[in-house]
Length: 344
Length: 111
Image (tube, rainbow over all chains, first blue to last red; front, side, top):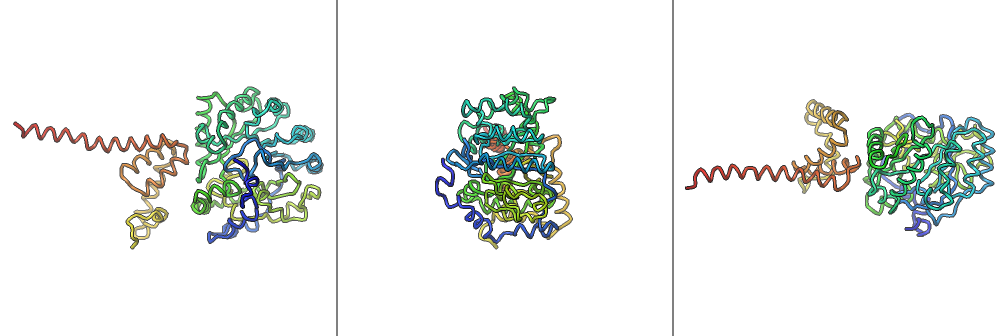
């Protein structure tokens, strides 16, 4: 399997994705926000600095909104990272640095970037796909590196059974993920009293919404502990966004309309109030700024004069209107969805 | 009238039954919601029971709703099919156990 880009697929073009999403007779997202008194959507403050340091990944997951994979070569340069660090030095209020990708660890400057950020005493989250830890011996030291820098690890594990995980993320991913989780546990991650946070991410392996986060967390904890002696802190349930490869899956399986109707029918004003784009700024591999990782993949740059890390201006960004579209229904359905799981 | 007795879109209109009798519909839906809440049984367990019962009562709307719901709640295809077999076994057993009644009657009248 290749990325949409490598396939020269029509949906590799962000404008084509927007075309599919916006040419619809379904209720516009803006109308829902207006009815909830939330339009225009504005930031409540920016404390999370989410950096996507590249689209390169060792996996090709069917639902990936980044269209990441081994054939993607776009990665953040050290110069752009240096610009990010300068911004983090200038703004102490940016206290959480959320590093994502692709597989962020595949960026050759990943460790340097983490070390530099740590000097600023920021809280760092790394979104790891787990299998990267076992992908090559050069990554075997990652669990110890995470521990050394007190990094919070957020790992994808779409389900606690092999079948569903491998269906979404590829054959063998579940087995490697389990081994990686055990290695993280060996370092103290997910173990009570160590302070080393290991949070897992569930996302549905199909055209449906996640079940209740607390109920599923209980099942994950029970199943992973009983079968594999694995411990973790929290489970985040995340809704799949109708973007990129997941959009392709929805269209190809004739589930697109049903899924969008489901998202729209489940619109929750309380979740809309708590969407992550209100306290997050997203930085792309090339330094451009976005409201969230999803707008980033749709190439919808922030509506602000401060559009690039080289011209980062927090007060201008706090006063911007957040760009919305039909894809935003993914974050406002049911209990809500964000990089930190349910929002209500 | 639609050409078919069953129309999948009608599932989404279930709540409209209150149009003709609001009081009873409200009571039913309130009860229904209460039944499916997490309690002594988890919502996940209740979903699988509902799936099996849906097959026992052969309700296409219920099968539609609870096939999705049970899968969403993490039951595997094999587990869901086993639940359907439980419904099938009870239904089949319910017929077969009446064979005893048949035997009793035949033994009563036969020489």
